[in-house]
Image: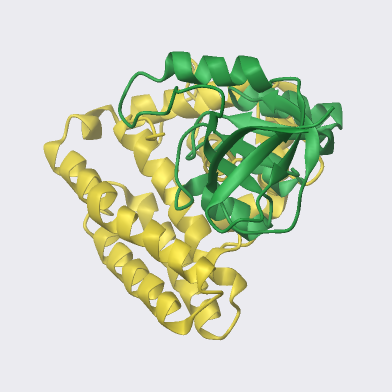
Length: 200
Length: 138
């Protein structure tokens, strides 16, 4: 699902391997099933990659999921540096990222907290859904340059639909592909694309 | 028992977890903890309220967290409420005037807190709506 092919070698992993490792990098701990869903590979293919990378001490299985080892994180970040070097020098994408960070993200985090502290108030959920809708449109502005970002839009649509049907865990629960979870993963992703650290 | 530190409360709860404070500076330290099988023996101490590498520990049943920066609206605040895991945020020592300064150099502040608490057995009191306490227990 990655945008262009990068040959393996010189420490840079191939696209399919990056997708699997990156899914863990973004989610922090992932099952093979979750990875397969978000990178659109079969579970068997994902497991084959995981076992190969485990032998290379890039990932480890801690029971509930797979984690990146230091070497695995280095592979992911090397890929981001190589692949997105051009975008990092692109003022438009930086402006796009900064707009996300300063407006949409701040509003969304506030809305999540309001939803949590109101114990799932309908109006608070509507506010989150409106922000996710805006986020989907925002993503649409860069999918020509980062095609894999369309997958975030599709995941957001699925989470919103489930939340709208009353499956409230798809609003914020960390252990399912909830709106907040997808938002968090995207935030980690765009920070890696533009090469910025997360504010503490 | 002495209240030695306090901070913002991630959420109000009657849960009062007890454990030995363990400072986790990086993802590798989390992995080491998970492999040790002693996750539930510790109250986890991290610098940032937006620390993301703690997520696997929360998913695997961490009992309590102390952060040295960040508000209840930040990443760990949100996750603590979802996991219903007590969380003391932007904690400071009660016997010190040192406080976290947004955008400032907080290295000395962080280090004094870590040195004071790491290895100590504590209980978290998150029963107040706003203020959460760290209690040293003998």
